[in-house]
Length: 452
Image 1 (cartoon, rainbow, N blue to C red):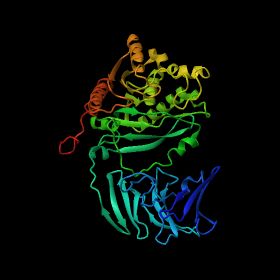
Image 2: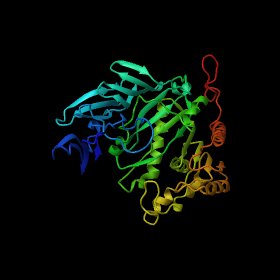
Image 3: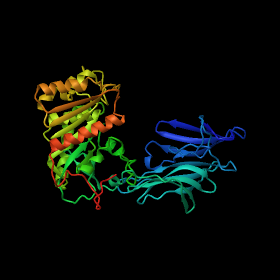
Image 4: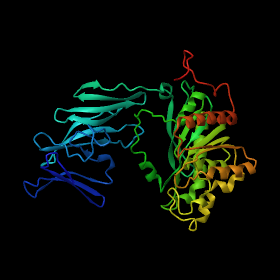
């Protein structure tokens, strides 16, 4: 339950099974209750949003002032209405972006009035704060695939820009991006994102770097649900280890979903099969679109993505180079379950063994670079995993390299480590995917200047 700012009203949230109800009570008046909102867990596309806090805070936005403590509920000046703010997602998120909204709900009648709704055409807008609900004054964050997020004071049709945020990677923002759906031989459909070098000419076959992180699902429906909150109008964000930087060197960067599908609790029975079929389907589609040179493909990932990278390199012939960071390569060393696998080693011995690339190190194709933080505290990815696999590969005369970074946890963080990794990654790919004067060259703008 939550009180209004003046303490005169209490809003109670009740959940029974899949049904949620919110109703208001005025303790000083009577025992009557007034229904504000009702929704089912299945009503994903028609939810009422969240109650706006007394300080104008919208869920997911910023807070005014400092201090802690819970906030009351924002009510109208006459105490007769409350406000809900939320996001309405489209049933086809690949075609239409989500809409942000604010509704005023009359407490005693439940009558609803929409006082703000964003556009979803070419830009993403979200209400981050309400300055004056009755006057219709909001702070709205606006962004698009080509425009860095900015905050605006919105009052009716008037907009005043409040921030001057800067796009520090304009070349990456301008890089062509293709998103499409791939179908596996078994009919399962999944999504792929491909980022191409600025100025890419259609039909040019490029060396490609795949970066992925498999996840488990019990069917097509559960997979599709994960994409419901996709925002096609969002501004692209890049971290210090985002593989998109490789487009500056002429690579296509491929980020495929990698669904592992099976009955609840037994998804990993199909791990190797689905891993292989996912990658094969993506490669075939990219080849059909004349985007990649399938003889010059790299694959990489971090943590579970690293584990799956090595699995792919021991079970498929597709990749000439691999980059695996902070991974686990022997599942017998995590016998009490791992990731979404809940069976113990002794209950699913064959699954644990078949998912351990260490057991198939003799089948490694391509050249593997491993990196690992020496203070990795993540459960299941102890720093000893990389040396164990490296020694095995070295003894088997496989092409492998290993870099261990002191003081780093599960994911490199320091400037020195990040710069060292990029130097080694790019050199590794240049050597093993092969230089090509038409593709793997530094990208420059028309005036000859390099990207920032």
